[in-house]
Length: 299
Image (cartoon, rainbow, N blue to C red; front, side, top):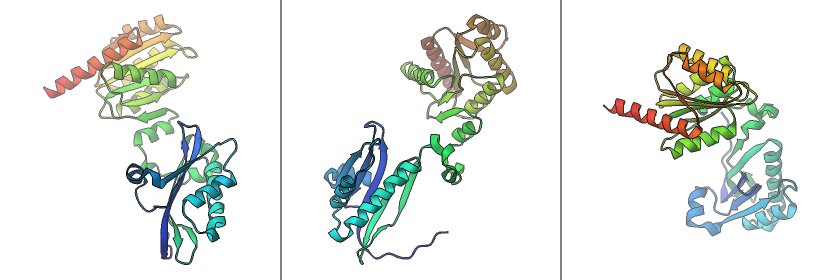
């Protein structure tokens, strides 16, 4: 438990640094009206919020920190302290691979001191490997258990709200597959990139991960084998289905190296696997299978 002395507050301010991906910049956000929901303030009083964009290659400049300090309405005697605080926050954001640093409220006490009364930070998970001290603070109980399980197995997984499970190799192909599912009238349950080396063991892990989501009504496997081979993937799929005893329809689309052999393995497996030649056909069959499951459950 962390206990802090009470603070006599004269005024409350808002200060934040975050990565603006659309602008490809770091944006510094401040307001003289802190201690409240900044989203609500942005809607009702947008003029009360100041935004200053920082070029990452150049870094935060002194004049930008001073400009923000003046915009926060601080008295002249604490401007230098505010500049030091703002620059320190920027160094923390940069050096700790943070994606957000928010101080709300940043207060001026009755004795004229500037105090960060409450703060929160968000970190780039892809950089945690080089931020050991930050990684040790990670509380996985507060994260999506599906994503945590995937990370522990070396899989790239993002849980979504749909009911068509996806297992795909390659992030670009995964994004295209989810788009095609949406275009066909369905909703993807996840983003899952099994990578280029999808062995039978890795394939089974991916299957179990997708099917652990109880909302999944159908599963789509879409593999383009370049580094990998379709026959290896097909063998992994067949083994996984036999071990897992799948209860939902499975749609498989293979393309690339040894695709004919892969299709033969699936066709001769005797398993109720729905195959497709193209991505569009696979998405349509996945949505159709999902709709049939939902109709049966409704009946």
